[in-house]
Every structure is written in structure tokens, then in C-alpha cells.
Amino acid sequence: MNDLPLNPLVAIQGMLAPALGISAVGLLLLGLNNRYSILVNRLRLLHEERRKYLRHLQQHDHLEYADNIRFMSISSQSGELLIRSRLVRNAILSMQTAIALFVLTSVMIGVNLLVAADIMKVVPLAIFVGGMLSVLTGILFAGREVHRSYRIVLLEAKADD
Image (cartoon, rainbow, N blue to C red; front, side, top):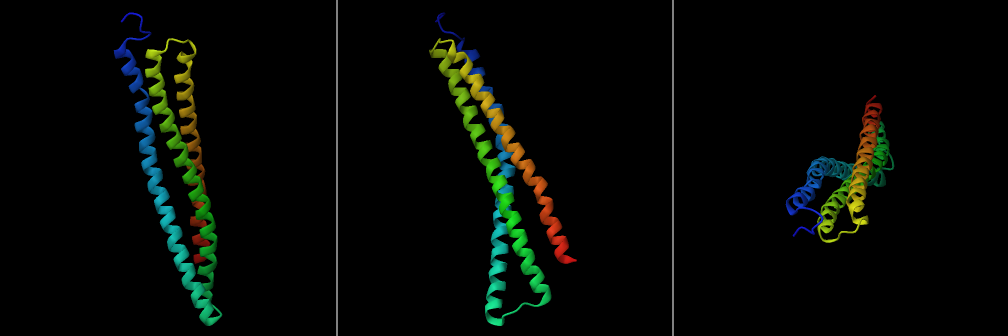
């Protein structure tokens, strides 16, 4: 038992440490998934409204002034919402990658119990740092999406003027 590189209790504690990262990223993912769902639903509603105007155009060859403004606003908003949904999707994928790397970190800490090679001592740290970089990437994508969200508000405000 003395030839084990780590005490099993210490190893279990070490393996559970990345779980803090997993739960923190899980909370971020919860918010991002909610935002993504709202964006996708908004896009679907806009496309449904756009199809309504297109059917009207097929029957009457023109739109009233207010309807034409709304039709143009829908097109602008749809483009912006697509960009925002891509940013949120990328943030979600980055956060999911981080969770996978944190789980892999825990596994590699456990492997350190069985394999006494010096290189194995660095691997969990490298994987953990990769997970943290993935979290940072996700946060940057989410930040860009929040920054861009203001454009949609401006488009709607201009359409109402």
C-alpha cells in the first residue's frame, strides 16, 4: 500500500475538485440554453410573420406603408438574431467542452494512482487548464452576444419611428 503514488483519500479529494468547475459551468450553461431557446423561438416567430407578409404580397402585390416597414424590420432582425444564435451556440459548445475536460481531469487524477510515470503528473493540470480556457472562450462568445443584442433593440426602435 505504501508504493501507491498518492493516498486514496487525497486522490478522491483531488478527483472531486474539478466538480466545482463542472457545477459552475453547469449554471452558466443553464442560462445560455435558456437564451438560445428564446432566440430560436423569436426567429421562428419572425419567420412565421414574414411568411404571412409574403402570402399577402402574392395576393395583393403590395403592402401598406406600416406593413412594409415591419416587413423590412423583420428581415433586419432575423439576420441579427441568426448571428446572436450562432454566438450563443458557440458559447454553449465551449462550455460543454469545458465540462468534458473537467471530467477528463478527474479521470486522469485517478489514473495517476495507478501509473507512477512523471509525465502523468502534468497531464491532469494541462487538461484542467484546457477546460478553463474553454470556459473563457465560452464567456467571450456570450459577451459578444450580449453586446450584439443591443442592435436588435435599436432596429426595433428605428422601425417604430
